Length: 81
Image (cartoon, rainbow, N blue to C red; front, side):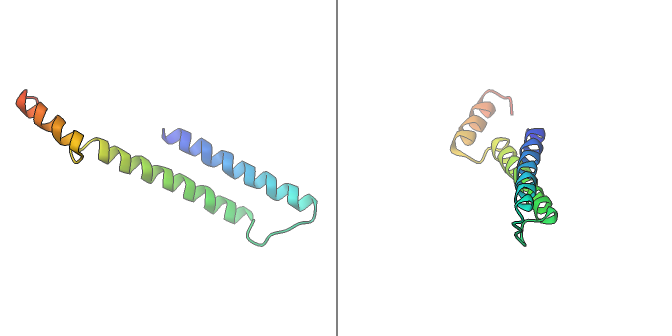
């Protein structure tokens, strides 16, 4: 899953770089569309994806939700927890 996040971030970064190059050939320049801003955006995508995976993993591997509490009770009844 972590690899797919990196692949998506690379795809977005490549797309933005291609747009930047295309606009440069037309002599259209945006002050905010630079290699540094693209790299920063890609970093934000990767960090957001990792945070999402972390939050999801913690949520699914704990007994916080209603379903999780029911699972915990069932495991305790069967002596598995």
